[in-house]
Length: 588
Image (cartoon, rainbow, N blue to C red; front, top):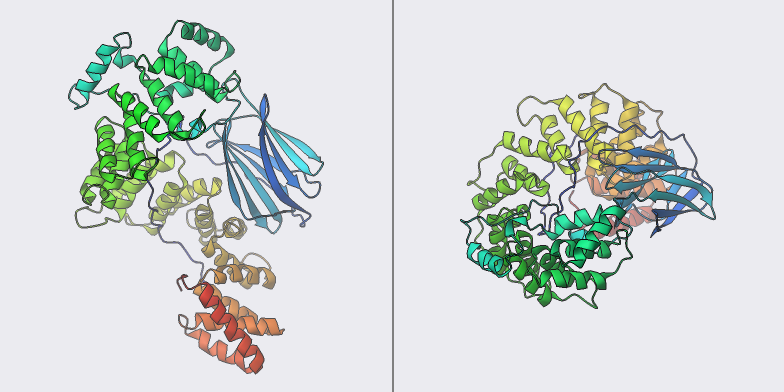
């Protein structure tokens, strides 16, 4: 009953239809330096966080109830800032705040440790950046992150739609070629092969310098459609210019009127998101997307498919979605290939066909689309039906490709494969390596797996202190098995002095989530002393909840019952009924 619990390989969640954003630069994970925080009592609370854009920087203001100086570290691959606030609790639950404002992607806040109490703030970055932490003043700590020349000064709805894709031009063999040729002949001044997508131009627009801007403005004045489109996107993003979506739309309209594909794509995105207008205009978005498709845009075809698939501004029509996804997929668009695979997997708009789903997953995965790699690995590891052959080597291949790009789900699943020895003999060194990669990104399952590795000496030396540290981080993020293992450590004094209060704390956290082993152990711990009415009632409650699964619970329950009054027994049984009602969907 007291052995540490290892975790079985996790199944991947179903991923919904989406426009998939690829990373701008390939990132290789590395181990960051540990942030060391001295023990500290609870002395302050981290509250509201405000993020504001200034002319030359992004400012993050963190409300703190008392003077605290955070321990700050900059970590690379992936780039992020880690700030630990010693002695600080958080006012609300763990949270992730989407920012999508260069140079910051998002911000995560969590209770990193309870002993010592430490709140961690992680700022996920798009690229390496300097930062400055201002001392506590007027109830806040302020972090300033300066903009570089290549970074935008304002966030936008459009940024969320940016996808880095290879420019796809219809080949002579594709069915769309007659339309493409006709459109190109109507605008002979714009060679089809030279056209760049709106997504690529947006990336270039965000990297403009003052010198570049002058040249772009001069070319736009000569009615050069590419220059007009890039200048429009610079106005939209606020790059070196005041943000002005009305001027952006005016310039895009001029370029689109000459049949420039990227401008048509951009106008479709603007209309779909309601950028620069009173409200979204889906019919107008479809019109611009269809024009862009005629000029060879696979991105626009994918956007049309997504509108039909999700019923966004149009009547939901899965058959139409499949038609447009297939058109873009045949043209080589990885997002469309992945979404088409999902349609076959679910049987939406087409008969369910796992072989066809795997066919398109292979194509998207081979273009390094991470969600496709994850799904393909899962299909290979656990085939959904007899038409698919189990192929562990293939699963490992695609998990490794996704893990090398920093995907924590792939890292944890890969570590689980090596730990369980699905390929034969377990490879604990590889498992520990990938758990470490995921743990270094703050993933709770990676932290738990790494804790098990240290506790059992699998791939790393036995180190109970390291095990406890990683279990604590995972447990404080709600990882139930980590909570149970941490409770065992404090209950049995494994590498630390026995601590009944901490053991109770973590047993209770896991017990409340329905872990039967935790319910039993917590009941036994409370039954040892039966010092108070609350202890007796709680011991009875948890032992009663666990007795259907753990036979030893009945004898312990009978012993506790002997020391209780009829009133206490009635109260405990009422708490059992209340818990079961509140947790009727929790497995035991």
